[in-house]
Length: 251
View 1 (cartoon, helix red, strand yellow):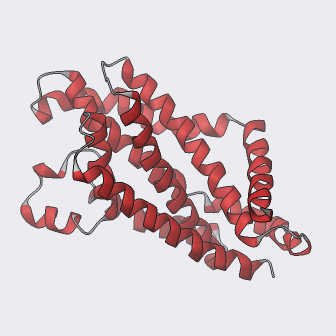
View 2 (tube, rainbow, N blue to C red):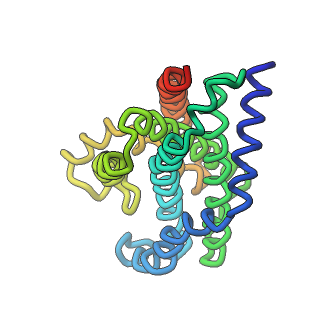
């Protein structure tokens, strides 16, 4: 119960800070909105589908996964600022659980991501996107797991490098091949066989395929539970790893 209380206290505090300056939620969603408005209309002829709705059912899930990956991987910059300001150092004198210090922040990032995903989904409805609410909630669960995992990784790396100059190129170096090999912008069914074989080792490609299956209403597609399982395992592993680094940093 103490751990749950501590996590809630950290989460509530982080949410207060976010709500005081909610413009960052809108800033984070700006680039995906540009993709939605300026790139997605090109997909109907490119994908050779009959309607815009079909094109958006393929593109929007990938766009949401992109938002979850990038939104999580760059959360470490805020933690580096806290390290420099002595916030983490002062945490040593508090009785708050060390894991809660990490998990509360990651849950804040997850809530922010879901809010952005709702905005993107609502905008996509204007372009005839249709998805059942139950399938959409499962898709949001997939995004939440991705956000928890990527933000925990970002916090862990930030604790190791302790420098924005090192964190930025490192995260970009990791993010670019991961994104290109996950079929976010275009399905990898259009890719040559060797590229599809490499992509099978990318966990995010399973998440993208599962999210796309949910958006077309195919709840029975094995990619759905496979993607959820992979993301859940990776999220737990990332949180445990980052929490150990967090505990070591505030002893």
